[in-house]
Length: 148
Ligand code: MN
Image 1 (spheres, helix red, strand yellow):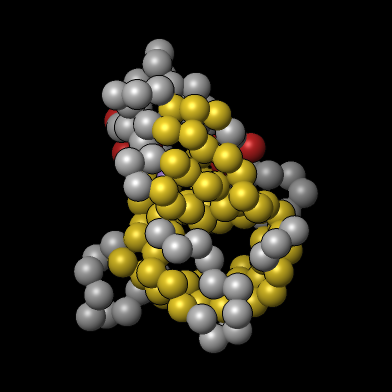
Image 2: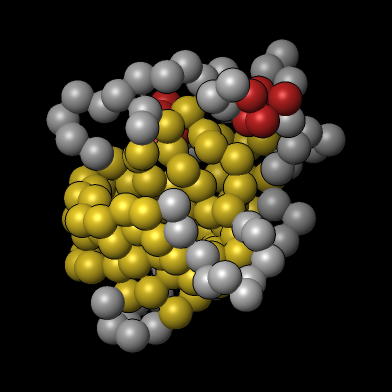
């Protein structure tokens, strides 16, 4: 079931995060990068695909220089509404800590296979061509994000 993992990990009576339903954004695809002060500080890159936000935790944030690569660990799909979420996930809850939007904007998908996506970001900070792919020798959830 879509978003089942997302819902299972959270107690919506306690966290201010969106409960999540499947909706498509009306004005084209979006992406968001959250800065997340969880147990370890990291960034979460999320892009809209098939009505949800496909999500990866990117410890060192997205690459800014052409040719740079960053490890991205895939996490559960998030609801599209999460794209505007900012707040504090309370202690004891999954992902406890402050969540802030670091960048967001439009997204254009150029090419997509099960193990690779080529896309363009039109954010305030992130602009240009990127790709994310899952190298066959890597662990199941480990991907590489590349600034093209
Ligand atoms: Mn996170």
